[in-house]
Length: 540
Ligand code: GLN
Image 1 (cartoon, rainbow, N blue to C red):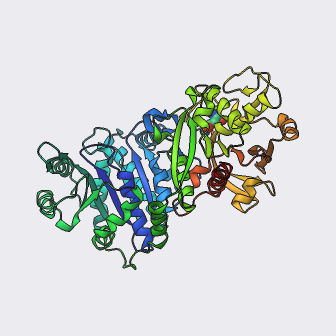
Image 2 (image 1 turned 180 degrees about the vertical axis):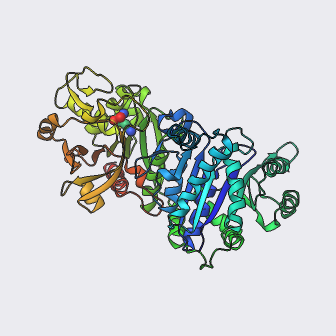
Image 3 (image 1 turned 60 degrees about the horizontal axis):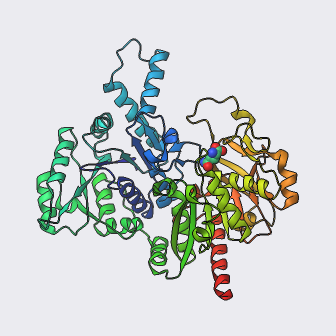
């Protein structure tokens, strides 16, 4: 079958959930047995979101091949179990960088380099390069931003040209918003009509419209939108707010979205989708009654997208164990010795979050000391793991000035330090230790039992590392290295085996936790939290 290309655009307002719609389409096509991948174009000039503050852009997601990516790629992977790569997330910056590099090499043979055709050709090349691998039946390309933005115009122009080249093999899905005006008690389709007109004025006729709405759309309204926007009435699909984003694929399927895509693109016929595993997850999610209370200690508590993959991984693990997750965000800057009991006392488990820089770090030490001394299941991730090490050095090894050289470059006890090959690095973008690395696990340790394997591959995003000069002292005092990189010998996982569950990973297991395959380490942590919760009940 020829590769089919689906382009997902958005109009009216941002944050409508193009990523969720794209992921849902991918889930539906995968469930029908097609080979699918999803790509995102981000219309900003940063080369990748790796240099962006979480306040700007939420979490930075990391792919197996070490690309710092938009958080929508996290949605793609969680919905589909597909591993994305750097080819799946392209920014305006990357497109321009590549065109400018070609210009400097002289590849354009003296021509004036212009947005059309050079930038648009580069965009098209990035779409088609996924198709050329021959690995996919469908390539779903989500175009970030809102139609009409100056920023996204070259992308829209490029996909307009692609439609011309690809004919029936290309399909446009446009997502818009239908607001409900309380005072008038009416749903309003005018913004959708305008947004489609805008798209048409740029030469694109959407094939399918997905209307995001908070209230059910009457059939008459769908017919009206169809009429005004040149689409078939059945191609006007409603996307009503759902209790969970994971319901969206089913709602889309009920409205025949997948069937329509197959028919419109002329894809080979396929069996009806198999949702058995997906439905089991949804059933567990809605039926779970007993709660599990997990605290997430970090500095971006007002910004929950900053910890998206962690909160999702926790939800997946809790759901797999038939529990409802109560996730409490605890502001590390507000934690101190006098309120630790009050803020942490009722948790069944705690996560010490990843992060960069000094802000909020002292609160993480306060939390860690309290959690360690009260033997609460605790999971440190990346900076969280580094904080576990520093706190242990200070409190147990008596190295009061122990620190990471990230926080205190002149610390006499650099228990966390820059890797040798990082010392000469000055550029911030794309220069961390990024992507999947092997990790050998110590037999019998909590992670080895959790994964049921002696070696795993997990993804990294950091510059600093455990300083192995101190390892003997840590191990003698009870904090062990239970996971290391077999090539470089770097410490990847620490554990205090004497505790209920006290594990820190230099890597980010949350990036490889999906709805259908929750990460085993999160499952293990969650089991420990449930056991702890039970043990508290029996004491009472
Ligand atoms: N700031 C730490 C480092 O660069 C940890 C990074 C993280 O938590 N992702 O090593």
